[in-house]
Image 1 (tube, rainbow, N blue to C red):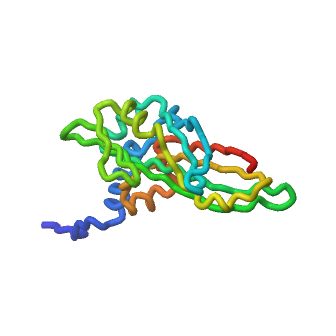
Image 2: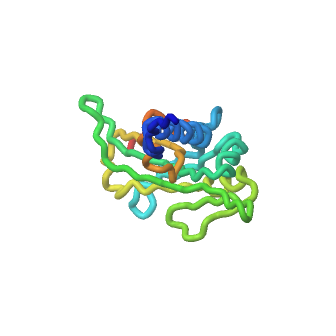
Image 3: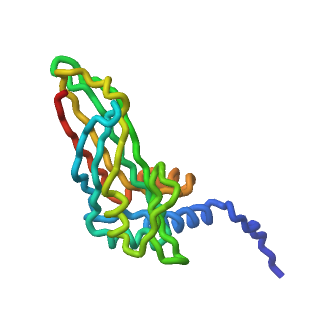
Length: 199
């Protein structure tokens, strides 16, 4: 009778670990794929003085909300970040950065009520609705960013505000980010805008 020694099975052997990581990568690539042909557009951009504060006001519009709805219904949690950077435009020297502000809202889907949920900064109660396009149109029609004291602006000088809009997947496990370090976690391509003005 012939017996052969067999290596004891281990979940951490090289072959199994490679297979598990490959399987997880395929799963998350399907989960985190960018919504192609979608864009967030900035509308009605205004800079004004409110109680001696520099206020930037604008609205956002997302085309093809149906694609984003599929992402949310599949379990994705998305964060939309809008950042505004105020700089002084100096023709002889480099532009001088003065101040910045950030706006972050979170989008998710409630599978029990079948509602889309929009959580906005500074608002305790989240907005809910069955129509994602209508929800975003209402929730993003008035976005305010406070860029600080109006005294930062010097009369007769030129300034510009750079605004960046980005939507990314949130709640992605850290280990998956390290495995897929090359993967772009943006759900919608980043959009940037610049507004120049003279005070």
